[in-house]
Length: 310
Ligand code: FAQ
Image 1 (cartoon, protein in one colour):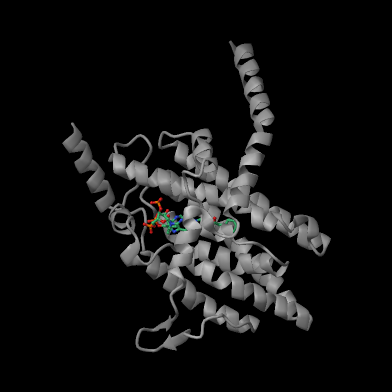
Image 2: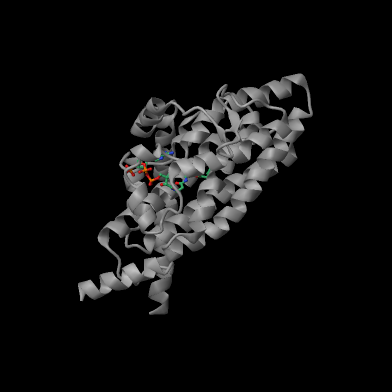
């Protein structure tokens, strides 16, 4: 009965074991996972746009090949994540409809424009760096299919982060103009990168329950701090300044102190009025409509083969 199933679920979570698709789970657990995994999948797919903007203008064949590979990986991540969400009883078409209708979120970071090639490097360094920080603990998430998808995604994210850092190293060892491009891009992406971790803990309605369920392993603020601590020495190695006058080592805490990002801006961006929200959604909607014939053809092909087998 329901009580026994719930007790089994609680014991599985308490024992740090995995919940699998056929196991009983509370409806709220299912709902929260669908929300988070769908948002994550949408982020990967929308996240192809800012960098995709530079594929045709890459400065060399080598840079173009690297960027193409990275953007294709992001499409792949979106697919693994939609597949993980489907094990919870929703389908990808339904989730895409919710996204294009503006009823499901994607990461705030992808609502900022990419204005120079340095942004490709800085996205790899800061945005993928933040993504890794946030996502490595998700490899230990209590829901099996999500945790397993994250293992592969994190491996690829590490390559993305390194490619960004390598591009920036080349630029900071180049001309003054290139160094200025890197600094200017860092100035624009620093604060939005901190916002990727979500609202401060006191203002995060989902964190506590998600931690009890073993979906999240750390709070938003804990991961944000980890990211700052990890990034400061990397900035020093690159010779770029992080645009926060309040950033300093605190020996008592054993962490860097830093200024809070502008949470009013964060709220505006996640509620649809960031600099590129309209453009990102319009492009996603257009790509979805223009892809209709591919989905129809694939469906017709699958039906034809199903008939042949009969
Ligand atoms: N943007 O109660 P919480 C990538 C929403 S990395 C937009 O704290 P939660 C790789 C949140 O959904 C980016 N919305 O929520 C890549 C909730 O709204 P709702 C994707 C945000 O879930 C790199 C409300 O605010 N990564 O794509 C954001 O416990 C380069 C209250 O917040 C993931 O999705 C935000 N930044 O914690 C690709 C990682 N923050 O649904 C291409 C998995 C919060 O109630 C190029 N997700 N919200 O209406 C997570 O770890 C969590 O969902 C958090 C939010 C930490 C993002």
